[in-house]
Length: 581
Image (tube, rainbow, N blue to C red):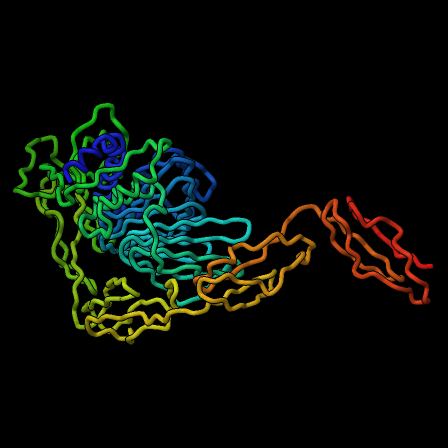
């Protein structure tokens, strides 16, 4: 391991500082009082802009994002978003990747999950720690939860359809599909750790893949670098080792990628403790100073050139020892504001300098155990925010958690389910070469730790559904064999020429949908007049027109002799008449 680290020192020095700066920013932004809950841009690099609901565009900063704000990233750019809530972990965050755009489409109030609409590009969510509030990622066809998971979600479109790709690295992701009108079209599916899934939207959203294996080398170098950072923050619980991630990164990075991977061996439990009792509660704007300072954070030990400044800061004193009030006659008659925060609700008291604030009765909130206040109500010598602290507790058997081990083939994963509740298992899974027949145990009303296994039957045939315009044609094919289309169209209803299928017809190993693709271009309308009747056909520019039929005689018995114009090289709309003799 020592040699492994030594060989990696140079890229660590080149790229580590910027990534450590991101984590430092996250720690600073998520600190402070409980009254500034919301979604923040805690770090940004490259071309990042924010457009609000009034179409006013500004550069990204440490400001809170609001409902309707649009965050847009250019090439080689990145942006970190953190959701600051009452019990949210400072280690959790969302990475907006290069060439992406998201819309803040929900209220981030610190009490419930928020929502980001991913218009294009990709995001990586690190939510391995349990949070009171998390961020759901919505695309045009699905909603994906990020609670207690590490995952990558991307959304892209092409000429024919759109794709939502999901890589679950740690934990489980719940997936709800939505149609174009925003209506749910399935029971929420579950994708387990270290699996890949794809949602396609054509006539409607459906799973093309779910819970399939993937190789780390399928990810970009930038994605792998973010995962190395996340692995350092999470520590030994992360399912990929630093060596695995670095090996995949080394294969992806080439001479055009000058970014170095972050450190791979750290001590996640090391934390800097400031001897000062003062905590800045104003949201900081982070800038880079010319001279670096030595900083140690959870999961990192490196030089980090960071200077933190605040606008109109409010400070909170958390006394570790007895507070000695400042003795000065200048404070005579001076009052200070004490803000008392209980579950997001604020009460303000005005207290004379050196006096004591009135401590409220211990608050009672359903499902929470009050454990005390985070500050003193005595000897008020400055503005102060005092927040009620709670622990969640299980008051009866209905809140006991059970471990459900889910086995799919030779892979297994565990999920936690409340006593008496149902396990959130997918209604269908795709395993290459097998047909999913259901689960071997009932997963309704879980009352004990349990192992539930997928029933897999080796597949001998698969269904290939051919789609030609709006018509479907199912065909059965042997596992691993090539499929033959039921027929090959020549043109679509608009006269567009058939140019092929959107997927390979060979090596069919799962049920598949294959769609006919038609060319687009300039077409001309050719009107045929045959025995007084009019018939129109569409003909590609420069091609030969095809009559609807070739007549033999007209209604008077006169023999068909030919057409009054050439059928070849059609360059404009034209009328062609049959003549008889």
